[in-house]
Image (cartoon, rainbow, N blue to C red; front, side, top):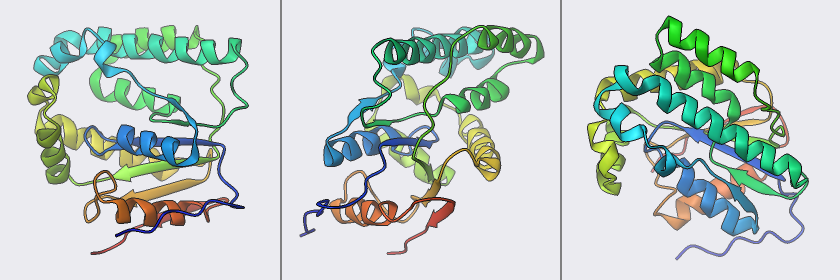
Length: 220
């Protein structure tokens, strides 16, 4: 039985962003961290994107509207936060706004990418800088297992090639990322979604991070 986390007197990061490939568990981890720290959440809403299921079935035909919908959605979320002056309260997000370019470069052709950049430049996307970014990493076979386990209908059409390409894009993105303290978590041998002990050990580790790049690679 895992012991309860003792957060009394601990210096908690006020804004945490969780990132990673489809199926790795970023949204669930963001919600668990928010519950543990009593934080608000700022979440992607893929279920609100009417183009997403079409994109998974036929990426070429639906890539641009899918990407623009996510871009506009994130812009609206950030603008709403700015209007409410809610950048000061603590929160956990399951995305970085900077990663939007990552998906655009993977899914769009050159003409579509040019249009995407034009739209991006006209939007207000000044999100607050996180106090900590958590990048969840997992190999393709683990992602496939977890996508199958959660059983979201729209995700049944996701190709192995697309997931593998995203894994490579995420690796490249975070290889150069230096905008905030970064924790790279190897999720291949742990289950921070369903195993409370794994989750608590991760929280204990991340609470010690104040700056720089860190790797969490626990074995069983």
